[in-house]
Length: 112
Length: 113
Image (cartoon, rainbow over all chains, first blue to last red; front, side, top):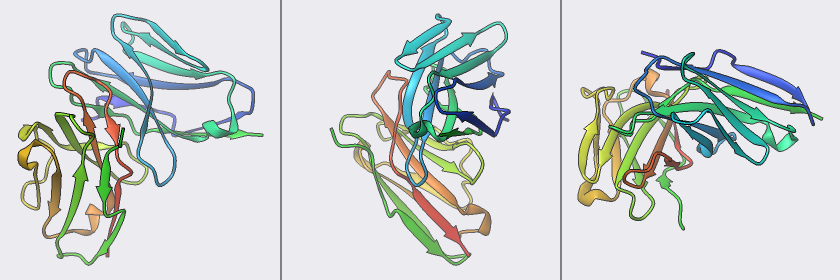
């Protein structure tokens, strides 16, 4: 039962351009959404989050947008840098049980 | 602040053998998670503890997997007997009570041959 879906397994972008990662969810009970970044041989690290009462959250080069009616969120990275090359996981949580559900991930490659 | 510690980092075993993983969460974090990440997939929750009680173990294959969190701190995850399809990275994460952000350890990469 895949409640969080990332339909693009990979994304290649030129350095300096925008990276847009997409995520869809099916469970309307989710009230908090997170993005994690993962380098090879390391655990996922928290990147940015958004509450369901907001539609946008910005932190430096990273912005997350939430469209509740469409059950869709996206992560924008502007400008993309070589160090951004990693796997990005979308995750969702229901504050009633704090159980994190993850998408399958999107591998981002930033080309010089 | 020390992060989530896991050991071992890597483990290779033969099928039908047993294996155990250890996790030490961030000090004071009440919630502890064990995830299984198969190559090319997202992390799948195996079990979630709140202090030393189990909150959710609905996706834990209980015929072969077991986990415990004694005294609400460290946790161990055991597989007995292992199958080839158990080859994966096992991630431990912890979070402070009421917090949505979970912090992950580096994981244990298990290869079953």
